[in-house]
Image 1 (cartoon, rainbow, N blue to C red):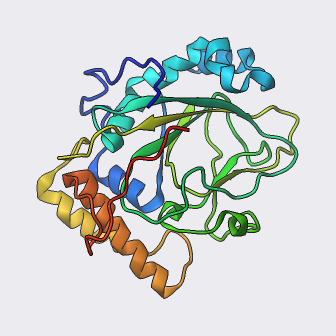
Image 2 (spheres, rainbow, N blue to C red):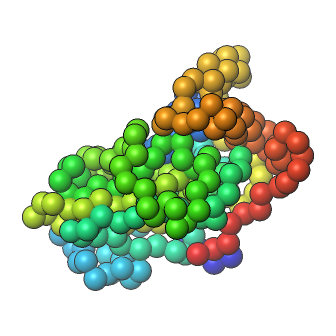
Length: 272
């Protein structure tokens, strides 16, 4: 695998102040994303925005090296550690996305396959406040647990329950690599930037890597993971989605690596 130089999580990132709670990890399991506010000041994000240019693309970290400070921030690192473990690594792939006047199609960046593991996260950094008119990234909560052929997914329009990521300047959205997403049309006169990086898990979990309360975690999980679906779906999908929720939760807590039938084992995705 190829990785960009990253110092890795610091001791402060792994303190209770920056690690996620049981409730936050359970919310991620249900919805497939988590919004982080780095500790960096607003002036930092304003400066990054002024330095970006639409053509930077995969050279964005070379053109604006200060962006790396966002991914080194203790709040971002703490959330990454909570979901991918203390050995998480920054993938070499990165890109600058710019909203245009035409919406993207719905798509997944990963293989189209249901599974119950978490090997890779999007880390989407928005240096400016994103409004509904500026072409926000739109995601479908819980969709990382769903399959749809790529050509069929590209024909879908608005989906009931979809979420537009209208976020404050400086926000970093961590999302499961399999989540359905699309860039919406920018109808404003303001350029909307998003820097996308990837974080990878490099070893199976053996214990929770977040701030957990074992005495309460099981009760919280039973309640949260049995709640209604993030988006409207068929009764059959509800059963499958609830099962996969519990499997992912158990995987993150204990490293269980097979589904309930023991029929398959999901391997880490290739570097892309």
